[in-house]
Length: 360
Image (cartoon, rainbow, N blue to C red; front, side, top):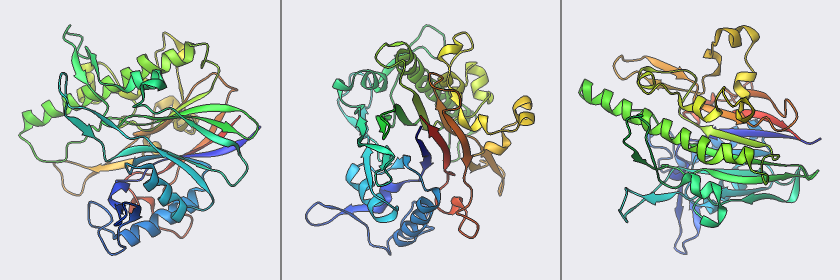
């Protein structure tokens, strides 16, 4: 059996850290430039903070959310800031802006995967990537292409796309055990500017409809075929990242009668195709029985009306297939501070890292 430490971390707009030199080679921006969108830290300060976090997390496999938009940039970050040797991948994300259009949206918040190769825990070729923009990648390409779906159950299909395409790879351990990982960053429900109240609710409802559509698409077009196809049904699967949704229904989701993350995890009517949730597993029996998820908050946001009021929410997840030994993903945790004396993780990013151990 081999144990690896998996980390999932929305690292907050890493694309802000990079530029190119006169030869078009990827480099970090100068240390004294602004390193984040809020102006809180310079590039040099952010690099130091990110480096301290990566040392503390001490992962073997990292799924990076809000990564840069080039693999070379993610590789540079791990080469310079993380301990050890790494191989990395960024899923470039482009899609058309609407049905029948030719203009293209390109995401600057891409999902990436990084594998640490100097500890002997992986095979010589540790990661086989399936590019979700490449038709030759099959199911992951089909599932992440723009799609039509009747989310309102009103017989009127709407057009949707993924703002960030999933990063998807097969990971091979040193004992030849394999599993696959899909890193996702789904539609945000956040509304970050002031609007007239009825307009605000219309936007909130639309955001949730888009998020639920993406979760249904991942479930119906990828996860269920994956878990029933002879070629993949016996390969363990982890779906992880910033799903931008927690358990239960908020007011807009009540109108849709659907929860994003619970749609993605599966239906009670087909329990053999459902996914476990590593952060749910970490809760006490009392909190599980009461469906009390307060201890699982992975980020917070400011109340749109009341000053100095913040809401703590659980929107970052590690969910896993049930086609491997029970407990193959275990010991999940949410890291809130860099060691005993280091900075809180909220000074590094607006999301806390989520970690778990994978044993195969």
